[in-house]
Image 1 (cartoon, rainbow, N blue to C red):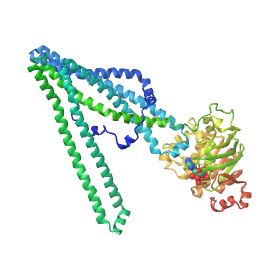
Image 2 (cartoon, rainbow, N blue to C red; image 1 turned 120 degrees about the horizontal axis):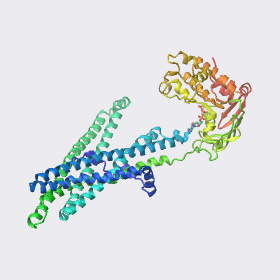
Image 3 (cartoon, rainbow, N blue to C red; image 1 turned 60 degrees about the vertical axis):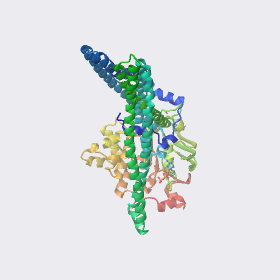
Image 4 (tube, helix red, strand yellow; image 1 turned 135 degrees about the vertical axis):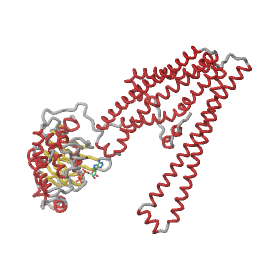
Length: 604
Ligand code: ATP
């Protein structure tokens, strides 16, 4: 009967849960069950196990009656020992079945969550960049981890608890009525006597806990506000010490009262439970005794013991089933949240008749391209340019003018809102996404390296690359000297996100990584942060020959990079404001001249 107080609190919904009560529809249930269907054989087995263990769990109570009547009262030693052994055997059997049941239970739950996790991960990977930039990373991870773990709990506890408690109750009631319908009736009538005060006490306690929580938050708020450096300064300067002290004392006082009330509610709760849980058996003994003594009923001492024992076995399941509604709502809310994620449309999809071209050449054309991230603010208003295979262009412009956006549209990290971008004459939206992205290499402003060795990071671009190929790419990226100087060479760890490397080293490693991929089109989004002149020179020495040999788009902030390009496009206010070569543009007196004078990082 020692039911955990905390367990009782789970039986009530918070205001937030009440407000967000999920809509349970047939299609939601069907969808949940579709995850169970692959495991239907195991489900049937569990079902059988639950029935068996519920019945066998009740059998010892029934056998107690016979132990008393046929063994003890009849003074039959052989029968007594046999019944005791059978009872022990049944108990052992029921517990062994429960072991199998919990193994199967966990097995199914783990497999369902395994399926869901994989499905969710795959789905999230298909989501566009927009999804990742507009959703809180913490939320995404919570959905992936705790929500899906919640499903595991629902399968292992909620579903099976409904099943096993219902079966136990039905079987107990049937046996009781078979033993003696009058006593069974009394037993069933007694149950609300126990459950109603339990729920009432549980609710009071729960409400007090909620109030105490609020009070605690208030106390923390006061402490945080007034005991911080700036808070104390304000209190002192305005002479509010007394006021703040009284405010703190009042809330503290409220808290003490709540705490006492809460612990006393716990005491009352135990008194009520203990009293009512013994009222039931006493009533059965009384009514049983009256039937035996006054009405000469055939009822035996054993029968009454059986009924009392069965009644005791009903308290737990009745209580659990009373909490089931809440658990059910929580489970449905959990599934609804997970399905909401599954239903989020995949924005960047492969075309149904996606094309893979025989050979990629690398001619890029932007025709009247318009783009907005949020559907409101136009970032690109009308962009038109073409880049011939083998050529290179530099995109320059004020910060935030949309240069990186132009680059991101080519591998379809986002799709254009209007206009078209073609790759070798084919709209990028008609090309196979994997094929297209394979042909494009981007060295982005923020270099991302995984926590691993230099080799592992480079192999990400080409898993089957030999050490020779790797070193060749490193040589082109001007990072080979650095690697050779390391004691462990390619096996040097780069640290979390490459933190053990300098900014320049990281950039050159990411250039080497792109070179290993050997893309047809190279996009180099130059970091705006200034590097020291040696690092800069090393990057420049690496990038210049690469630009000469392949089609490239350079989002440039440094004069040396700009000068390496065949043509310069100046992006401003969502359009190409100027284009040409450096010598002409610098003389024009327009945006480029202004940028040249104020923003470009020029060699010293
Ligand atoms: P910089 O030279 O500083 O790197 P940029 O010219 O490359 O700038 P973009 O990164 O293309 O500029 O950004 C263009 C505009 O789009 C900016 O005003 C930026 O605030 C906005 N923007 C960029 N990414 C997003 C996003 N994921 N969601 C919404 N707005 C964005």
